[in-house]
Image (cartoon, rainbow, N blue to C red; front, side):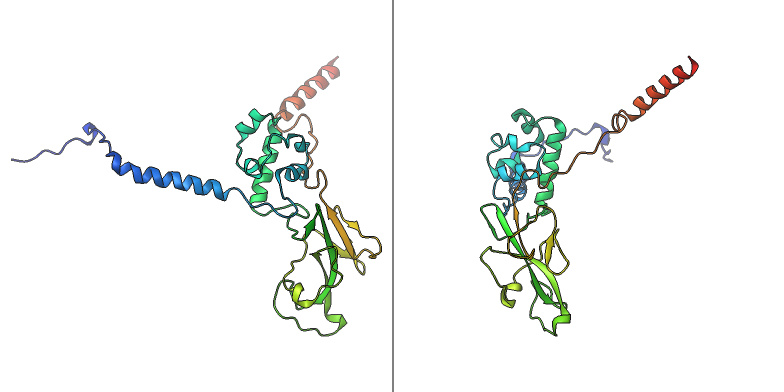
Amino acid sequence: MKLLAKDPRTLQPTALPVFLLRPVTTALRCRRQISTTQQIPAPTPFVPDSKTFLSLIGRNLSTHAAKIPTWESLFSLKSEQLRKLGVEPARTRRYLLWWRDRFRKGDYGIGGDLKEVKDSVAHVRVVEIPRDHKVGAGQASFRGPDAVRKVIVNVGPDVKDVNEMRLRALKPVQGLKVQGAKTIVGPFVEPVKGSGGSVAAIRVQEGMWEQRRGMKVDGGERRKVMVRRKRKLEEMKKARG
C-alpha cells in the first residue's frame, strides 16, 4: 500500500513551542539594547553637553535646550518625540537628526576634535616639524631649516614650547592653515594679542557649525513646475491681450 503525499497547500502552520522562542526573543532584546548604547557617542571637550551641541549647529536650536537637557536624550530621541516636545518645523528636526548622525561618525565642525579646551575656549599654535615627520608619528630626523614645515596643533594656553616628545602625541588641527610666515587663518579664529598671529583661540559660538539654507527658486523643487507653468500662462495672457 502506497502512502500518498499530502498537498503542501493543505498543510497548516504549526506554532513553535514557547521554550524555543525564548532564546530568540532574548537575543533580539539584547541586540536592540546594544545597538541603542552604541548610537550614543561620547561628548568631546569642545562639545561637552547637549546645550553646547544645539548652540553650535545653529538654526535657533539652542532655544530648545530645556526640552533636550541631557546628552543621552539628545542622541536617543526620535523625530516623533522631538515633534511632541515642540521642535518645529519638520525641516528643523531633520537638520538636528542629520547633525546627530554626523557627530556619531566623528564628522565634526571646526574645533569639534580639539582636546585641550578650557572654559569653552581652545588654543592653537604654529609649530615647525621636519618635512619627513608626521605629527603623531615616531622619531624624526632634522636636516636643517629648509627641511621643516609648519603645522597647527592644539595645546593649552600656558604652553609656550612644544618639544618633540609631546609633538608625537598631537594631531594637526583640521580646517585651519598657515598663511605667510606664521599666521593662523580659518573660520572663527581669534589671534592672541602679542603672538604675531602664530597663536590663536577658538571659542564656542552660536551657529559655528550651522549649514545655511539655500534660497528657494520658483517655490523650491516641489513647486517649481507649477510656479513656472502659472508664470508662462500669465505671460501668454498678457501677450494675447
